[in-house]
Amino acid sequence: MKVQDPDNSSKTIYEQWIGLSNSPKIGRLGGGGSDYAAFVQHIGVPAADMSFGEGYPVYHSMYDEFVWMEKFGDPLFRRHVAVSSVWGLVALRLADDEFLPFDYQSYAVDLGKSARDLEDEISNKGINLSPLFNSIDELSKAATKIHNQKKNIDKAKGWTSMWRTDHAKVRELNDRLMMTERAFTDSDGLFRSPWYKHLIYGPSKHNDYGSKSFPGIDDAIEKAEDLKTAQSWQLVQHEIWRVARAVKHASLVLNGELT
Image (cartoon, rainbow, N blue to C red; front, side, top):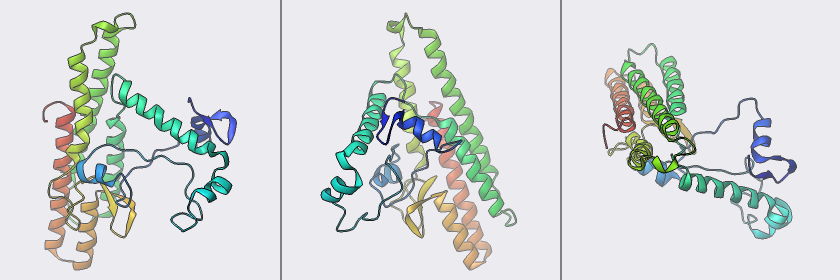
């Protein structure tokens, strides 16, 4: 709400963004071919990727250089200044906000949708998805709980009593928010690509820049459909248990029961 749109001086970037859709969304990170892969995919550190537009004709070509950008891509570099301003404000919020702005309630909602899509895909294969759904329910409850804890700390503090904040409690809550993403990783990684440790979101097998929910499960399903054996479908069930265990661990971390 604070950065002016470089292409429309009467609106902020946020106003312009929400005007493009009735329900604008922040897409998931997951592709392995980007700079954030080592953070998100390997060690489970939350990350963001922000930019203007979907791409441009000279991307990754010999013409993708300063002169083209100065003459055609972004004359006067207004968009560069705007994006830098947004990044700066994000950095300030991460550094100065009392609570980290991580929302695991929406995370749980997205996981629930992905699980239902998975259920539709393999509903006739005799696969038990109850462990996955149960773990997502637990994550949703843990996310609601920590959200309420943040609200209660704010209410107890009040605008005239900032010096009465329980700093140890705030720090402990932020540690839980910070470490939860790492709980979605597994030391064994994905079967086809063990360097990728994140079991919830990962690169698509056939598109390194694409993103898949439950990439290990997706790979196991593709293999089972090719082999058409009972053993291959048992591997799908195994991958579901692995993901459910990771989501369960994330719930425990969010609740402060596991570090």
